[in-house]
Image 1 (cartoon, helix red, strand yellow):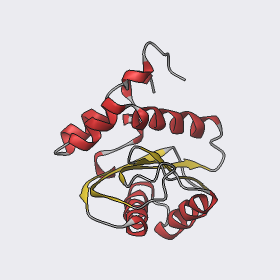
Image 2 (cartoon, rainbow, N blue to C red):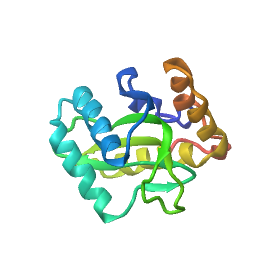
Image 3 (cartoon, rainbow, N blue to C red):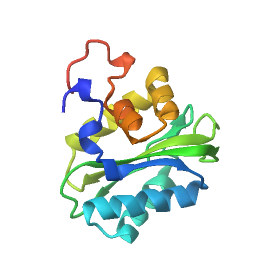
Image 4 (tube, rainbow, N blue to C red):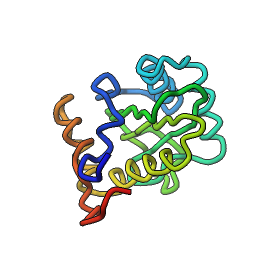
Length: 161
């Protein structure tokens, strides 16, 4: 995956949730349900791993964005599920802001560097104000796919990691 593609190769159309109206725990359940359908891994397994990671510290990193993530035994490839909420939820984010954009990132247990590279790519997109605005402004599947595929302005001339 090159940096010009954002993190679009990790997200299929079935992995995009728009206009959710849920609280934090229900958000995790919704993300896990979609991830289970896409990966074939049991929803309960995904939810357990994501909650274990979240117990270590909030994955809400600021500006209304969160990247819940986990490594899953038996997962075949790094996979992401994107959700945009109608209204921000109390997520325990570092800046105290409610989260309205979340990207669930799941990696195979032994993914190592691939997990870190994917996490960095998603993080770069969600830390970039222009990219985050595109996520929030997406009105349909096509515009959200464009937001996911867009290269964050903060990438500059950076090469693929």
